[in-house]
Length: 182
Ligand code: SAH
Image 1 (cartoon, rainbow, N blue to C red):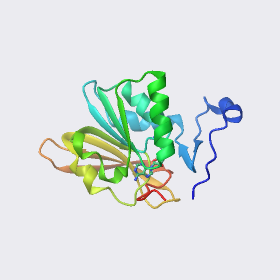
Image 2: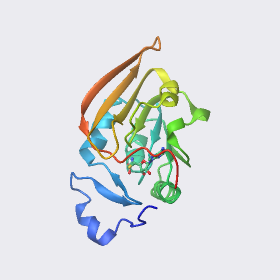
Image 3: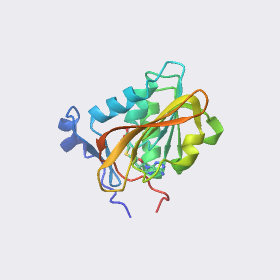
Image 4: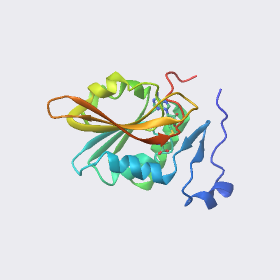
């Protein structure tokens, strides 16, 4: 079971502008804004891009991307988190974000291929379904490594010919990419 602790607005509000990771409930955390910005930049997103995010969390990263690209599809495995994020981004008025509750390990076949894929939870390997759903010429940013240890932030580039190149960016710490909602 996950602790259903939620963002306590009164105590957390003062941290909103800090460059630190913050709890978002259900044992999950949002990355520090520096990492959100870095991952966004590494994708080199363009205005007509279609982007897949794995790990909706609070919806913050999806909101940031939605201001740059044409369309953001985002998948969250913890239902209450995903539903709350969807409600939040809708209420704020982001019109180009579509969310679903599912295991994002398998991407979102219906809308593939994607120009960019961003995975905001750590996996011990690069999920093959996500590589498959990346467009030729596309980029994926993903933390790769063991859960609860330091992982490597990687960028996977698929060339126009479909060849894969992997770049190691820097050490990071993300919550684990889960395989099942328990
Ligand atoms: N990008 C988020 C923060 C992500 S925290 C934000 O901007 O707030 C990582 C999120 O990935 C958590 O919400 C976690 O529940 C989710 N997650 C973990 N495994 C997942 C999976 N297999 N599929 C989809 N989401 C997953």
